[in-house]
Length: 594
Image (cartoon, rainbow, N blue to C red; front, side, top):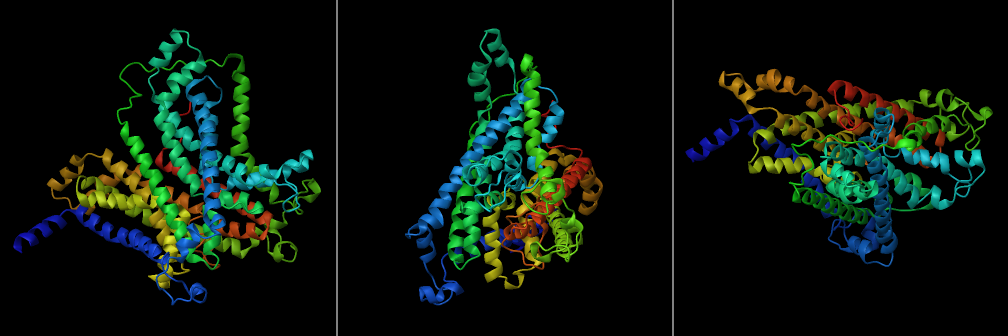
């Protein structure tokens, strides 16, 4: 007994063991317990089903899984949305890899003009909320077949876009792919930037054509990055909600996430929990496969000790033309959407783009002036909008403060306790929320709040908890990376002379790695400000945030308000991102652009 007591005291004498133990308890309650609650809810009878199933409340049933997988209507409930998700996700991967990969090659391997400007602009779609391009596409290419109001393209040209071009699988794949193309650019561009060019130069000396060099040397060398990008974009596209909702709803094109939202808002919550479980298993399988894939070829050498001076491909007479075409394309996906939102928010009558139809009443008008949108006052006079803005800022600040602090502590403890089973378990639990699609993760907490901790249901605290846990992986990775760079000798020197742990942290660890720790706070803030999928099932009218208010206005068909709020969110996110760059001294595209 004395030996056991001694071991316990010695174990908890190390601060990182105390942190790891506390994180284990906290993360178990906030990740595994809600997950088990959701699994349970997929196998029990809910209140709305007792009469139909003729079973008592909370009794065991396989009806939900049967309805999802084997019922005659399961085609519409699960299989068709699942097929649609696969189609749009594969299409998104192709778009992102082609657009992002080709842009990375142009920036790193050619003498294209304006590289730094284009590199900075190309990141915009990833910094902005995912639905930004979706709403812009809708504004520009909507037709009179659905809704009866022409978009900007039809109003200017008189050509009515086809339904398949305006709504459904094609625009969802294109828009989602464009949103994630900066991700492909960053990953593939980083490999191309650092790759030894000796093989390419040798091929050029042997008079191989540029196309053959690309097929036989360049693409195989960056294949691991391409495959990793494909899997991660596929996973992100499968869990996307906002883009399919905006572009699929007009023609009732359902994917798994929109079907999940529709099911949970109806009377078949059990079926929704079953669909969420399928999404979770799929997400875990995809990312596990990605980790295995990237871990198989750890010795795939692209950087050597030899000269890696890159001979840029000379575009010759096509240099100016290609540079202008790329500039136009980048501007269309980065700045044109902002112009679209501003213009649509000023239209008195949607579809009429004449100067006489422009008005500021949706921004500064009174309720008496506005006969559209149920006599809502202008956005800058609208107390609902200001309340939602305050809720967004408050929620983002609290989530970033809690996630950033826990992530910093977790990163410190995981690195200091590296090699122990406890550190490994906490590391996996901290990363676990990243594996979950946001909508499915929201379902997990919805289940917990409706069964285990009922007072949480409909409260801001529930939003804080889910935001804190969902963004913890960003903060913990930032903390782990910072601590991996910091030698233990620095802290050990303070420990030898008797400096207590809290003072060592304040005087040594935090000041040295301040930039990394700040990013661990500010990045969750940005993510929370632009989040929709995570909160849309959990908010109430009293704690509604800007993104869910935009979603509410869009469902009502009040396009001027939804476009105006979207413009505000984008501007706020870009300002915060600028502050992140200034505070941390880092830029997401640093090291890639010319």
